[in-house]
Structure formats: structure tokens, C-alpha cells
Amino acid sequence: MGWLYVISTNDAETVYNAVRLANVSLKKEKEVTLFMLGRGVEFNEISTEDFNVNSQIDEFYEAGGELIV
Image (cartoon, rainbow, N blue to C red; front, side, top):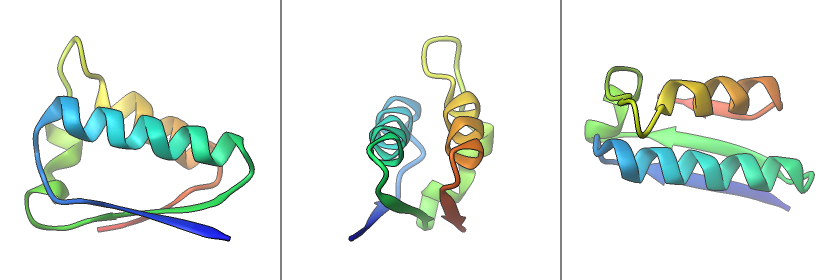
């Protein structure tokens, strides 16, 4: 069964936690797709020291997740 996570915000903490959840799903051998829409497409510009979104996205790619923007 596949999982789809839809992210439509540019709040760093929210996006960070959503991608972390997607990464956990990948580790449990689920097929996972992240779909960014609206303000979510700004995901690569919102990393902070506390919420490093880019590192979570990198982990997502490395684990074989699919990202649709």
C-alpha cells in the first residue's frame, strides 16, 4: 500500500515533521510520495537551525521516496 503526504504550508516546523513522518514510513518499507502544493513548494527555502527541512528531504530522496512539486 502506498502513502501520499500532501504539504501545503511553508512553516518550517510543520514541513520538517511531515517529512520526518514520511521518512519513518519509508523505513517501514512503505511506498511514499510527497506532494507539495501552494506554499509547500517553498520547502527548499525554509530550513532553520532547529528545523532542517533540507536534510529531511535529502534523507527522503536517499530512501527512495518520490517528491512531486
